[in-house]
Image (cartoon, rainbow, N blue to C red; front, top):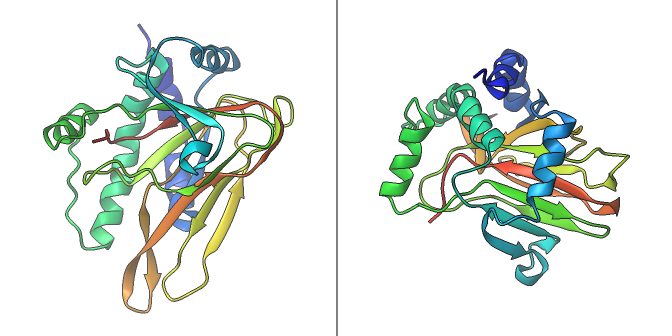
Length: 236
């Protein structure tokens, strides 16, 4: 059977995406899900496919709710993770080379997840996030253990301006010996957005320095916003 999700990932302009991630810490990806596929994943939220549910307000993460998928993942989630990992891997390795760090990531996602599991990081990390009016996500980083992959992807399952207003995706980068830089992005339905998990290399007077990056979501003003989050390391 043709892997349509792998074809969509392969058809992206990865030279331009790499340049945008290097310049801004994040980059818009082309449509990875059709409207019908996005609707099917939105419907998953009310099904028994999850290992846990988190109330953001309870933990002062913001307001809203998200649910961690149990494995095995729905087919689009698994296929997209498998297709995206080898495209993101050269960026990750290049970043760690600039920072003078060894790159621990093997060529294949399954081998990397096996290393996570051997280190005690065995919990699945693909998530569905749901925001209603007034909900938001505090600036944070998705660090689930000592092993991490420095890039992750979010896919908007809702249509901005139709299903919801507000809810822009936010990045805040702490630059070396300078004021922090904030950016906001509107992600069209079905499109992905790749961004920095923890930190990225930026030029400084001393060469390359690691700039910490946090991400979040601005307040949803109306409607319902659901997104799929793909993290490429598992959790302890």
